[in-house]
Image 1: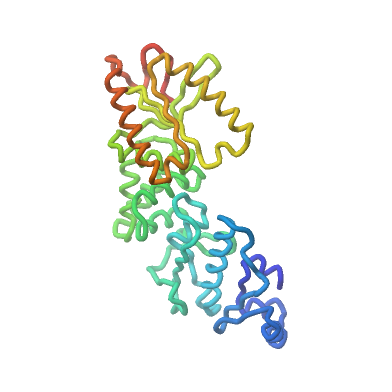
Image 2: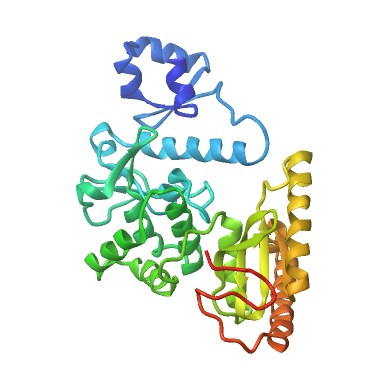
Amino acid sequence: MLALFDQQFGVAAYDQLRALGLSRHRIAVAVDSGWLVRQGRWLVLSTQWTAEGPGPGQREAQWRHDLYSAIFSCSPRVRATVVCFRRTAAALWGLDGVEPGFVELAVTSGRPSSGTLYRPRSFEPAALADLDGLRVTSVTRTLLDLGQVVGPEIVERALESALRKGHVSVDALVEAVAAVPRLRGAGALRSVLASRPPGAPPTESDAETLFLQLARRAGLPEPLRQFSVPTSEGAFRLDFAWPLRRVAVEIDGAATHASREALSRDLRRQNRLLLSMVPAGWALLRFTWDDLVDPRFAGQVVDKLREAWVIGLNQAPSTSLSPSTSPPAANFSWR
């Protein structure tokens, strides 16, 4: 019994305890002694469970506690039809842009016994998956549904992380969107896919996706992703570049400098890049996670991008570049 409560974040259903062999009398004794608390007919909570530790880990544990509580408040018959969807499914899949905290559930048949539950159209079998012992919408269906409750920028962040993790492909998503032209919310995913550069690789972090969105707000065209820079010490890959304007950008993710060794390695790389690019007239900008997510600094990022773009416009080479050519005075290439 203890293992069950630990696994389910301090939550169980009455019928689960009975299935473990606990008698009604034993459960009643545990309730009378204060070890367990019953809420309604089906939900049983452990008073010994706590979401340990401050920070994101505690928030996620509390969210999972609330999620299981909502699910186990239903009768076994209804519970068997419960599906985690929209933001709940996105958080369970670990998609960017959606933090654990929302409890959004659907029932595919029967009548819900909790105001937390919704009853949308029936899901196709292929739209469902098992994850952490819960029924959830597939990543594809989750991305289709997200637009019901969030804007296109969040959908884009979730999409890029799904591509990065290998959960989906662009072609498969395009087909999925075309197959449900009237599905509510699917328009957000459709617009994100339509504006995505053909053949572009996924961003390598949520910070990179946020940067792309800031660059658009600055009025700049889509930069090249993962731009390769050959140097005398080997090829270096830049996060973003506008080769025609000789502007490049490096993004430091939230965990970039988690150790002194990582910081030293990154600074050495930065020095080699500068020695290769500055003589060729390139501007190399660098932004951190805080620069991208803190409103106090995000406006400065936009200003710096516009400033670098103007400088690059004034000194751009007259030679027309194509994906098979390189800027003059440096052997830079497209990946």
